[in-house]
Image (cartoon, rainbow, N blue to C red):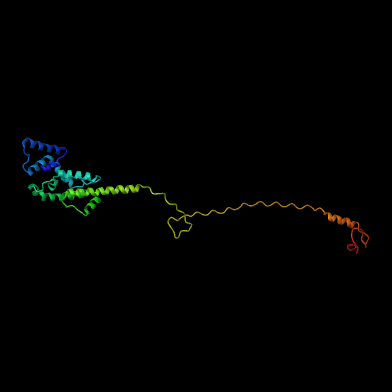
Length: 254
C-alpha cells in the first residue's frame, strides 16, 4: 500500500513491519478497503484525547514558529496536523492518482489542504509570511508541500541576508578625519555655544636697569703749547708800562 511509504520511524515503522509480516503470513493484505485502513490508523495513532488536544492547539497560537527555524516549524506542524487528523498529503500526492479511492477523496482533501495551508501561514514569522504571500508564483491554495517549499526558500534568503549584513557591520571603519577649529565667530545663538579660547596676552618685558652714570672727566692737563706761550710771554716787556708778561696791545694800564 502506497500510504505505508510514509511510515518510516518509531512506532509507525513498527506498525508498517507488522502489516508486511501479515501479508507474508496470510498471503493477503490486512485491509480490503481504504476505509478499513483509515479507521485502524486512527485507532492506532490518534487516540481521542490526543486528537482533540491537537485540534485545540491549532486553534491557538502556541504552535506558531516563534524562535524555531522553518524546518523545525514544519516538522512540528506536520506532526500536529497528523495527530489532529488533517494530514491529507497521502491523498493529494498519491503515486496512483487515478485509483478510484483517491479520485473519490481528492476534492475533500483539497478543501482540508486549504485549511492546513492557512494554519501554516498564520504561524510563520510575520515578515516571512508577508514575503510568502507576496510571492509572484504563488502555489495553489491547497498545495501544502509547495507552500512548505516556498517558506523554506524565503527563510533561506532571510538568513543569507542577515549573515551578509552582519559581516558588513563587523568591518571596523577607518580612523576619523581630523577636524580643525574655525576662527570665524558663530552666527546667531545656540543652546550649546562654541567656546573659543581667549588669546594669551603678550608678555610685558622686564624693566631694564639704568645705565651707570659716566664719571666726570678729570681736570685736563695743560697742553704743551700753552705752557710754551706762558714762558714766551714771561720774557717779553710791555712798551707802555714796562712790565713783563703781556704786550702793549693787552696792557691793563691803557
